[in-house]
Amino acid sequence: MSSRPSAFDALMSGARAAAAKNKTNPHSSSSSSSPKKRKAPDSKPPQNPDSTPSDKPQSLPAAENGHAAGIAVGSQEVAAAEAPPSGAPAAGASVQDRTAELKGKIAQLKRKSGDFDPKSVACWKEGERVPFLFLCLAFDLIAKETGRIVITDIVCNMLRTVMHTTPDDLVAVVYLSANRIAPAHEGLELGIGDASIIKALAEACGRTETQVKKQYKELGDLGLVAKASRSSQSMMRKPDPLTVTKVFDKFRLIAKESGKDSQEKKKKHIKALLVAATDCEPQYLIRLLQVSNLSYS
Image 1 (cartoon, helix red, strand yellow):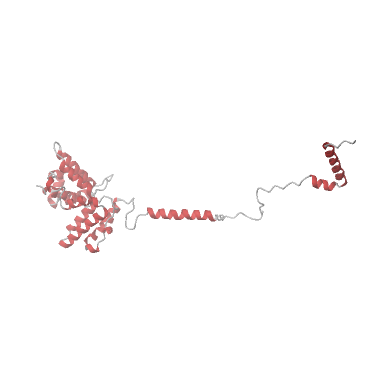
Image 2 (image 1 turned 60 degrees about the vertical axis):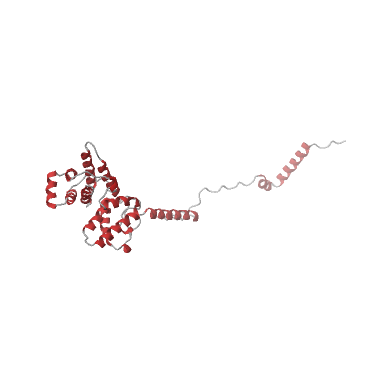
């Protein structure tokens, strides 16, 4: 009885049959046994030797173009937001520029109340302290007028400007305009005389008391002496500009000085104000000191 062929015998017989077939057709075996190798693509695209690189930048994709446009628009919006409004001084504007601007606009206070716009005169930002120069220029404008109606318009428009920009400074402006430093019931007095004012003026302006007294006798107005003395003096470092509240607070501080060396302390306060004063400010500082001192005598 014949045994059944094993799996190994079946496998070997299949291999022998395949080998015999390859011998009769060698081309088919080479094509079927060895697979074709895939050609690897080049890492760089072929370049045309005759072509030259272009100097023009390639256009960005649509998404990148939109992003670049957004950046440009955003930059324009930021620049527009940071730019000062028309008619307002730049943040880095010098004191001279602001003074010139204010002096050029101050005459508008003479307009009728119905034709006046508080924004047209103010050269400071809303909420910023009112410059003392604004009050002095208004006083100077009043001094050159004789008509009561025009003077009333100047005062009214001056107060409206302060109310529009810095309402917190209104009380100080009203008191100084009325030659007062406090309500009558407080009984505050500056307690200084012309002698102390002359000493402070001489020290602040680098002059002698004799020179100041001589010019005072010629002009008859210590305020004009202060203006002439202050304008002829040059300084290495300019102090911060005076504001209405700073002058008003300093006046009240002068009035409250008492005890030993009180006159010397008052003189130093006056000197500090005169050193920081510019343009016509020394003139009205001295006049306010003199008149406010007489108000309670």
